[in-house]
Amino acid sequence: MRTLYPEIEPYTSGMLDVGDGQLIAWEVSGNPDGKPVVFPHGGPGAAVSPRHRRAFDPALYRIVLFDQRGSGKSRPHASDPGFDLSSNTTWHLVADIERLREHLGITSWQVFGGSWGSTLALAYAQTHPTRVDELVLRGIFTLRESELTWFYEGAAGQIFPEVWERYVAQVPEAERGSFIRAYHRLLNDPDPAVHGPAAVAWATWESTAITLLPQPEVVASFTDPTFALAFARIENHYFVNKGWLDEGQLLRDIHLIRHIPAVIVQGRYDVCTPPVTAYDLHKAWPEAQFLMIDDAGHSFDEPGILSALVQATDDFAR
Ligand code: STX
Image (cartoon, rainbow, N blue to C red):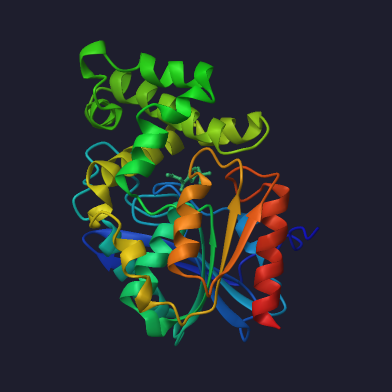
């Protein structure tokens, strides 16, 4: 089993102005002359963490982490009162990654994304295929209707009924026809007594269901009220808008990137983004290495997932 590389600090960092009043927080760690890799984080609306640097050999990689618009250390933050989500779409994020690449003087790079990060990695690669050296994709999510319905409208609630019940309890009975819709109203209500508990319930549901075994410290970190509000608002905004993607678009357009070396890592017991999507991607893209981890859930930190990811980054660097 492979594990994370030792802790490292960034050797440079900054805030990139991407327009629309948005500043994107970025950092670079590892070897300045190493192989470039960029890490689109999950959610959308989560953030990068120092642990993410450690999926890459710091002697071999130039590791670029950034927080997407409205998330993490980027500013303004989606928890700010009156935050405007209108310039926050999949295609704005794709353009931001290009802007960051140019800002750092990188010709092309590996793209390493899990969960929503896999969605964004696929969208970026299909838009700018010449800029992508390899793809490492984990916990595949393509934002199809069936994927949203599974996790946010009730089916997955049968696996974690006691947590699902708390997600449902936030929504008045008359609005339970679509929880994504109902949460859109709650999360964007200006009253903190309305949006606050809704955000925590949304983030509790998702963070509980992403690990194979209970991880109270994971739930605690993702239900911090400020983190939860940005995470829930941004995710819900993307889901109400179907990610600004045609249904099935990212699988339909695999032909644009089939020549790029890729690894797909999927946990068998991933309740958040269940294996069917990774399997659909594998069928559309048989050239990509497909690894089903039989004893893992969704999270980056599942031991079997992490081992496969580190092995993949090592293999691509050597
Ligand atoms: N959302 C899946 C996703 O990207 C559909 C995701 N879920 N939880 C996370 O990311 C964090 C662990 C990063 C909070």
